[in-house]
Length: 550
Image 1: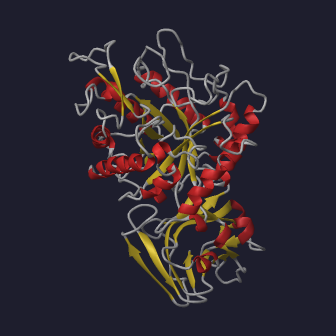
Image 2: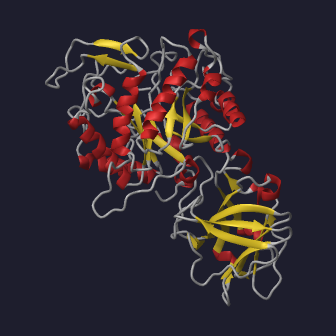
């Protein structure tokens, strides 16, 4: 957004934005270069010694060994696929065989460990065989127990996984221990012959650290500001633009990190970033952007870099000296002047700035609308931009917008220019990195009846079903609700609960927006829970309770 939704007209929306943090264009002094993640890796919780005893990550932890495995078991280390680190184990198990880790002569109390967890990759195996694998804990020299089939303990669920994707299985000790008071062996027993990948095997501690998340991977806010100062586009109308100091930015980020947010969406202006089409990126603007990204990355945020231009660009907005002008011409992509090649050019330059940091997400365009093209032409153009980004070597997550404000309701009803529905044309999108999701916006109530308005979650149902049917991922990068309405908090809870329950499809959410930076007129304290604009407390149940170390 960055505007108020066209169909909501001038309704003031509640939701808060956050500044999106993220990516360093190069390693900081003394840091190692970050290795890009795949989508399935980025969705798994990190291994964290503050609340886990890690038994396997690239190698078996000292004191533990795989010699307890029995039956028709074989395993090899491979670097071709992994959930963590640089390698994983490829396990081949015969029928009625056990892949097992044990610790000779040791005992571990069952009441100090709340779960056993590991990453698993079904690959091409039968899902029935995978789901029937039984996890067993036992103490050497004593009988174990019958164990628990792992089918219902995977997040994302086994049924939702795409080809080659990993999931994390977490089985509570309360379901495993039975009468046992101690254990020193963990076994994954097969019922039928099966092959699978294993990585990141860990014991979850009762005390310390953060709980394993039960919700979506990304919980963020939109940090409006860098897209403002435009007389030429969008619906913002503001004529100011100021960047806060690094101290102010760091303080704001720390505040929201403490609340439990782990993602920031940072809207930026195409014209301010690139004063002329196909021209160089403006040094001052891109430096400020990268500074924000570096500060956010240092605090652990994932940053969504959002080109907040509604599929438009104002030619002549800056003169040759770099000064903003009052004369310009508003162009729309596809009008004969503004082209897909221009969009590919700016994203090629942006990707080259940030491609070494896997915590940056690339949001190709905010809310395209009223385009002089049909959906087939639009998604063909977006495919060209995706290909250009991948040609830089970037493997980061890309968010793909639709032709009608990225709106969830229009996804399955909108067919611009006499072409196919967005939801049909979008199926043509491919990605060599297999790391993309569709960018969605949803404001409740929509007010035009194309969706079920009985609840905020119901409004998201149709696109969720579409994504699950076609094996696609979604990200709700903007959401909002009139904050003066008595139903507001209950409906926010309804929407976030719906996405948590459908986290095999939804990667996360980020409400719109934080108050814009107005440094000369507005002395921000950082606490937006008290200003009556963005009731962050509405999100509290979905933040700290699921908060992982960032």
